[in-house]
Image (cartoon, rainbow, N blue to C red; front, top):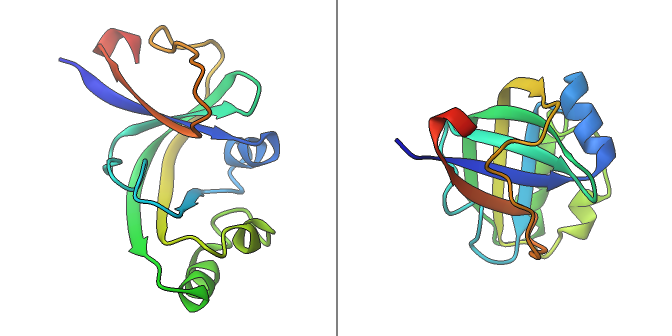
Length: 139
């Protein structure tokens, strides 16, 4: 039976924090309704690929929070509620001040990945979130 897995591209410092357990959630703030806002479900697997590097970790989406944002107050509320889980203070929130959609993913079962999964095919996409359909033996 085919299942979906998600691939999130993240910067090395955040990936290191995920693997160390100091970052227990992942945030995606976007201007448009797109992945993972539109598709990620609790229980699905997320692989984490380092920007410009290999896939280094995998986790399960324990909880998925979706928010429609109407302005800076909404972003500040999210920041107060989730910042500690996202690795602490960051300029990320300022960079995403014009976001209209937020997906906050609580992570569970984080573990390192030592080799590239068989289903992964690098593409010429600049997307920071991709979805793959995989056979159980490949995921």
